[in-house]
Length: 253
Ligand SMILES: [Zn+2]
Ligand SMILES: [Zn+2]
Image 1 (tube, rainbow, N blue to C red):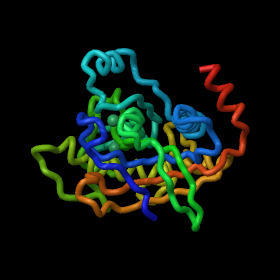
Image 2 (image 1 turned 180 degrees about the vertical axis):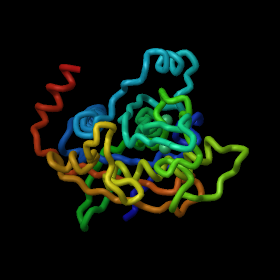
Image 3 (image 1 turned 45 degrees about the vertical axis):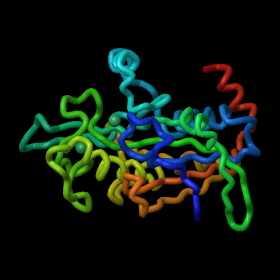
Protein backbone atom coordinates (compact mmCIF):
# COMPACT_ATOMS: atom_id res chain seq x y z
CA UNK A 1 0.00 0.00 0.00
CA UNK A 2 1.20 3.51 -0.77
CA UNK A 3 1.16 5.57 2.44
CA UNK A 4 2.23 8.72 0.57
CA UNK A 5 4.83 9.60 3.18
CA UNK A 6 6.04 13.20 3.06
CA UNK A 7 9.58 14.21 2.24
CA UNK A 8 12.18 14.15 5.01
CA UNK A 9 12.84 17.90 4.65
CA UNK A 10 9.43 18.85 6.06
CA UNK A 11 10.47 17.40 9.45
CA UNK A 12 12.44 19.65 11.84
CA UNK A 13 16.06 19.82 10.75
CA UNK A 14 17.20 19.00 14.31
CA UNK A 15 15.71 15.53 13.82
CA UNK A 16 18.44 13.36 12.30
CA UNK A 17 16.26 10.35 11.45
CA UNK A 18 13.06 9.98 9.46
CA UNK A 19 10.13 9.40 11.87
CA UNK A 20 9.60 5.63 12.07
CA UNK A 21 6.01 5.40 13.37
CA UNK A 22 3.05 6.96 11.57
CA UNK A 23 -0.40 7.14 13.11
CA UNK A 24 -3.50 7.69 10.99
CA UNK A 25 -6.88 8.62 12.45
CA UNK A 26 -10.00 8.26 10.32
CA UNK A 27 -11.16 11.85 9.81
CA UNK A 28 -14.78 10.72 10.30
CA UNK A 29 -14.29 9.86 13.98
CA UNK A 30 -12.87 13.19 15.20
CA UNK A 31 -13.58 16.83 14.63
CA UNK A 32 -10.38 18.29 13.30
CA UNK A 33 -6.68 17.61 13.42
CA UNK A 34 -6.00 18.66 17.00
CA UNK A 35 -8.51 16.15 18.25
CA UNK A 36 -6.81 13.44 16.17
CA UNK A 37 -3.42 14.35 17.67
CA UNK A 38 -4.90 14.28 21.13
CA UNK A 39 -6.54 10.92 20.48
CA UNK A 40 -3.20 9.33 19.58
CA UNK A 41 -1.29 10.83 22.52
CA UNK A 42 -4.12 9.96 24.91
CA UNK A 43 -4.37 6.38 23.62
CA UNK A 44 -0.63 5.82 23.94
CA UNK A 45 -0.80 7.16 27.49
CA UNK A 46 -3.84 5.12 28.50
CA UNK A 47 -3.16 1.81 26.76
CA UNK A 48 0.61 1.80 26.32
CA UNK A 49 1.74 3.75 29.39
CA UNK A 50 3.73 6.24 27.27
CA UNK A 51 3.98 9.23 29.59
CA UNK A 52 6.01 12.38 29.82
CA UNK A 53 7.54 11.42 33.17
CA UNK A 54 11.05 12.76 32.65
CA UNK A 55 12.63 14.78 35.43
CA UNK A 56 12.13 18.54 35.68
CA UNK A 57 15.82 19.02 35.01
CA UNK A 58 15.67 17.00 31.79
CA UNK A 59 12.67 18.97 30.56
CA UNK A 60 14.28 22.26 31.53
CA UNK A 61 17.34 21.35 29.45
CA UNK A 62 15.14 20.87 26.41
CA UNK A 63 13.24 24.10 26.96
CA UNK A 64 16.36 26.20 27.52
CA UNK A 65 18.39 24.72 24.70
CA UNK A 66 15.53 23.84 22.36
CA UNK A 67 17.35 20.57 21.88
CA UNK A 68 14.73 17.87 21.77
CA UNK A 69 15.31 16.79 18.18
CA UNK A 70 12.79 19.37 16.97
CA UNK A 71 9.83 17.49 18.47
CA UNK A 72 6.53 18.91 19.71
CA UNK A 73 6.21 16.68 22.75
CA UNK A 74 7.47 13.33 23.99
CA UNK A 75 6.79 10.41 26.28
CA UNK A 76 8.22 7.07 27.33
CA UNK A 77 7.54 3.74 28.98
CA UNK A 78 10.34 3.25 31.48
CA UNK A 79 11.40 0.32 33.66
CA UNK A 80 11.34 -2.35 30.94
CA UNK A 81 13.45 -5.50 30.73
CA UNK A 82 16.07 -5.03 33.44
CA UNK A 83 19.43 -6.35 32.26
CA UNK A 84 22.14 -7.48 34.66
CA UNK A 85 25.65 -7.80 33.28
CA UNK A 86 27.32 -10.25 35.67
CA UNK A 87 30.82 -9.77 34.22
CA UNK A 88 30.58 -6.01 34.19
CA UNK A 89 27.93 -4.86 36.71
CA UNK A 90 28.37 -1.18 35.83
CA UNK A 91 26.81 -1.98 32.42
CA UNK A 92 23.56 -3.16 34.05
CA UNK A 93 20.48 -1.15 33.11
CA UNK A 94 16.82 -1.25 32.36
CA UNK A 95 15.18 0.07 29.22
CA UNK A 96 12.72 2.64 27.99
CA UNK A 97 10.61 3.01 24.89
CA UNK A 98 11.07 6.69 24.07
CA UNK A 99 8.72 8.46 21.67
CA UNK A 100 8.88 11.94 20.18
CA UNK A 101 5.87 13.40 18.40
CA UNK A 102 5.90 15.58 15.28
CA UNK A 103 2.65 17.23 14.21
CA UNK A 104 3.44 20.94 13.81
CA UNK A 105 5.75 20.05 10.90
CA UNK A 106 2.83 18.39 9.14
CA UNK A 107 0.51 21.33 9.80
CA UNK A 108 3.13 23.75 8.45
CA UNK A 109 3.52 21.63 5.32
CA UNK A 110 -0.27 21.20 5.00
CA UNK A 111 0.31 17.46 4.86
CA UNK A 112 -1.56 16.46 8.00
CA UNK A 113 -4.35 14.89 5.91
CA UNK A 114 -3.94 11.98 3.53
CA UNK A 115 -6.30 9.90 1.42
CA UNK A 116 -5.46 6.19 1.61
CA UNK A 117 -7.01 3.38 -0.33
CA UNK A 118 -7.84 0.54 2.05
CA UNK A 119 -9.41 -2.56 0.52
CA UNK A 120 -10.65 -0.51 -2.46
CA UNK A 121 -12.17 2.12 -0.22
CA UNK A 122 -10.80 5.68 -0.13
CA UNK A 123 -10.56 6.95 3.44
CA UNK A 124 -9.29 10.37 4.50
CA UNK A 125 -7.05 10.17 7.54
CA UNK A 126 -5.39 12.71 9.76
CA UNK A 127 -1.80 11.60 10.38
CA UNK A 128 1.03 12.37 12.72
CA UNK A 129 4.63 11.29 12.85
CA UNK A 130 6.42 9.72 15.78
CA UNK A 131 10.04 8.86 16.23
CA UNK A 132 10.39 5.91 18.59
CA UNK A 133 13.48 4.12 19.87
CA UNK A 134 14.28 1.52 22.52
CA UNK A 135 17.27 2.35 24.68
CA UNK A 136 18.95 2.47 28.08
CA UNK A 137 16.74 4.46 30.49
CA UNK A 138 17.60 8.17 30.68
CA UNK A 139 18.36 7.97 34.41
CA UNK A 140 20.98 5.21 33.96
CA UNK A 141 24.57 6.46 33.58
CA UNK A 142 24.98 4.32 30.44
CA UNK A 143 22.16 6.15 28.64
CA UNK A 144 21.56 6.04 25.70
CA UNK A 145 23.30 2.77 24.86
CA UNK A 146 25.40 -0.19 25.96
CA UNK A 147 26.90 -1.35 22.69
CA UNK A 148 26.64 -5.11 23.21
CA UNK A 149 23.52 -5.38 25.39
CA UNK A 150 21.69 -8.55 24.24
CA UNK A 151 18.39 -6.63 24.50
CA UNK A 152 19.05 -3.14 23.07
CA UNK A 153 22.50 -3.53 21.53
CA UNK A 154 24.63 -5.10 18.81
CA UNK A 155 23.76 -8.75 19.33
CA UNK A 156 21.89 -11.51 17.52
CA UNK A 157 20.07 -10.26 14.42
CA UNK A 158 21.17 -6.73 15.32
CA UNK A 159 24.88 -7.54 15.20
CA UNK A 160 25.19 -4.98 12.40
CA UNK A 161 28.07 -2.91 11.06
CA UNK A 162 28.34 0.49 12.74
CA UNK A 163 30.57 3.50 12.24
CA UNK A 164 32.56 3.67 15.50
CA UNK A 165 33.12 7.42 15.01
CA UNK A 166 29.39 8.03 15.25
CA UNK A 167 28.38 5.19 17.54
CA UNK A 168 25.52 6.89 19.40
CA UNK A 169 23.69 7.93 16.21
CA UNK A 170 24.46 4.69 14.40
CA UNK A 171 23.10 2.48 17.19
CA UNK A 172 19.99 4.61 17.49
CA UNK A 173 19.27 4.47 13.77
CA UNK A 174 20.19 0.85 13.04
CA UNK A 175 19.14 -0.87 16.30
CA UNK A 176 17.10 1.28 18.70
CA UNK A 177 14.73 2.60 16.00
CA UNK A 178 13.69 -0.76 14.46
CA UNK A 179 13.44 -2.37 17.91
CA UNK A 180 10.85 0.27 18.84
CA UNK A 181 8.79 -0.48 15.73
CA UNK A 182 8.71 -4.17 16.64
CA UNK A 183 7.89 -3.45 20.30
CA UNK A 184 5.06 -1.04 19.63
CA UNK A 185 3.39 -2.87 16.74
CA UNK A 186 4.19 -6.53 17.44
CA UNK A 187 4.36 -6.43 21.26
CA UNK A 188 7.63 -8.41 21.12
CA UNK A 189 11.34 -7.71 21.14
CA UNK A 190 13.58 -9.85 18.92
CA UNK A 191 10.56 -12.16 18.74
CA UNK A 192 10.28 -12.55 22.55
CA UNK A 193 7.67 -11.29 24.99
CA UNK A 194 8.40 -8.03 26.83
CA UNK A 195 8.35 -7.76 30.63
CA UNK A 196 8.65 -4.81 32.96
CA UNK A 197 10.80 -4.70 36.09
CA UNK A 198 7.96 -6.27 38.11
CA UNK A 199 7.88 -9.29 35.80
CA UNK A 200 4.56 -8.36 34.16
CA UNK A 201 4.18 -8.93 30.45
CA UNK A 202 3.68 -5.67 28.57
CA UNK A 203 1.54 -5.40 25.48
CA UNK A 204 1.53 -2.21 23.52
CA UNK A 205 -0.73 -1.85 20.46
CA UNK A 206 -2.32 -5.18 21.37
CA UNK A 207 -4.02 -3.44 24.30
CA UNK A 208 -5.21 -0.58 22.14
CA UNK A 209 -6.91 -3.08 19.82
CA UNK A 210 -9.36 -3.84 22.60
CA UNK A 211 -11.05 -0.49 22.13
CA UNK A 212 -10.10 0.56 18.61
CA UNK A 213 -10.41 -0.97 15.15
CA UNK A 214 -6.81 -0.88 14.05
CA UNK A 215 -4.71 -1.95 11.15
CA UNK A 216 -0.95 -2.12 11.47
CA UNK A 217 1.77 -2.48 8.87
CA UNK A 218 5.55 -2.74 9.13
CA UNK A 219 7.36 -1.74 5.97
CA UNK A 220 11.08 -2.20 5.25
CA UNK A 221 12.58 1.02 3.96
CA UNK A 222 13.46 1.10 0.27
CA UNK A 223 13.91 4.85 -0.18
CA UNK A 224 17.34 6.38 0.63
CA UNK A 225 15.73 9.52 1.97
CA UNK A 226 14.01 7.51 4.71
CA UNK A 227 17.06 6.93 6.87
CA UNK A 228 15.56 4.44 9.31
CA UNK A 229 15.27 0.72 8.49
CA UNK A 230 11.60 0.08 9.25
CA UNK A 231 8.44 2.16 9.29
CA UNK A 232 5.43 1.18 11.37
CA UNK A 233 2.01 2.40 10.22
CA UNK A 234 -0.94 2.32 12.62
CA UNK A 235 -4.36 3.12 11.19
CA UNK A 236 -7.19 3.88 13.60
CA UNK A 237 -10.37 3.29 11.62
CA UNK A 238 -12.85 3.39 14.48
CA UNK A 239 -12.87 3.86 18.23
CA UNK A 240 -15.23 1.69 20.21
CA UNK A 241 -15.69 4.20 22.98
CA UNK A 242 -17.62 7.40 22.31
CA UNK A 243 -16.05 10.65 21.22
CA UNK A 244 -17.35 12.08 24.50
CA UNK A 245 -14.64 10.06 26.31
CA UNK A 246 -11.94 11.87 24.33
CA UNK A 247 -13.52 15.23 25.01
CA UNK A 248 -13.91 14.43 28.71
CA UNK A 249 -10.22 13.60 28.88
CA UNK A 250 -9.28 16.78 27.06
CA UNK A 251 -11.20 18.74 29.69
CA UNK A 252 -9.64 16.85 32.61
CA UNK A 253 -6.02 17.10 31.48
ZN1 LIG B 1 15.74 8.59 23.75
ZN1 LIG C 1 20.07 -2.73 26.89
